[in-house]
Image 1 (cartoon, helix red, strand yellow):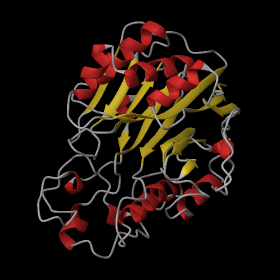
Image 2 (cartoon, helix red, strand yellow):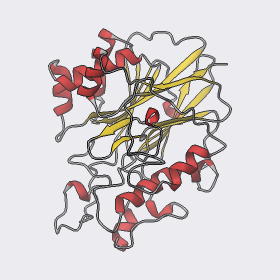
Image 3 (cartoon, one colour):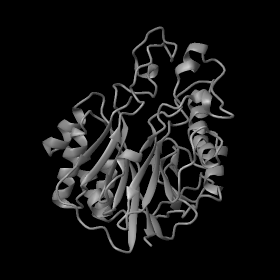
Image 4 (spheres, rainbow, N blue to C red):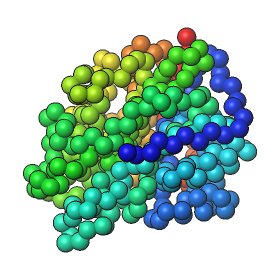
Amino acid sequence: MIALLLAAFCLTPGVAAETLRIATWNTDLERKGPGLLLRDIAGGKNRQVEAALRVLAALDADVLLLTGFDYDHGLVAARSFAERLAVIGPDYPHAFALRPNRGMQTGLDLDGDGRTGGPGDAQGWGWFSGQSGMLILSRLPLDTAAVRDFSGFLWTALPGAIPPHNMTPEALALQRLPTTGHWEVPLILPDGSRLSLLAFHATAPVFDGPEDRNGRRNHDETAFWLALLEGRLTEPPPPGPFVLLGTPNLDPEDGEGRPDAIRALLANPMLQDPGPRAEHFAPDPGQKGDPALDTAVFARTGGLRVSVILPSAGLDVTGAGLLRPAREDPLAAELAAASRHFPVWVEIRLR
């Protein structure tokens, strides 16, 4: 069983009485070996880490889902990061992470290179167990006893799954669907009620061959949420209210991949898409989608909307946006040094 870890820090600053700001950001804070991220956080001199801290201080969210953040047993890197952030910005007394599927070895030669134990032979591509995980930081307490971790869900268990035809029976029998993880983590609101976070970080639908393994998996990682919400799995749907957020890693209009599932998710009547927009953005004439919605800019593909926050239909959304300042703003240089991605935020009115 994957261990569930909760790190609690000292002072718990109050959450705004009227609204709750929820944000997600693919931080790109992943390294090629265990302990390297902690080294860079604790050292206080790594340009990317220092820039990420300043970005999050400016974002000032009440609840954060960070993707692309290396996991370690005991959340030592997460604790160090939160402690450093509290010095210059918001204090998050609650942190949560589970071991990701990335780097978790299967014992099989999944990538067909004739060897086992490589990054392509893990449940999710990774150089080591824990690389590029997810992390929740929160001013609000978390109901850890009620967490549901779907990270062990098998690909073949998804109704209508489309794994590649060249996977062996042995691989199909143990291949998990989530590349990183799929979680349901309830927040405890000030009135004692719960708001569940449905968090995930899917594989990019590229870096494969004609079998389209990553494209198929990316599609099905998003399709999992549709099946769960619609009651088509053995697991019951999440109780409302909830917020589905993270990195689907697929733009509904542009780039490579199979967009049917993400389009269906964005249009699902059980969810609302606030369409978080940037006030400052660069025109992208080669793309079909609205560049103001792009949550990342890549050298090869240009701007893409690859991160989302989708509150359940009954929630009162009062604001949404991307932290993407004008080029002349000093914060723009910090963002560029930290990640290719922009933080996405949504504000919800608390009843």
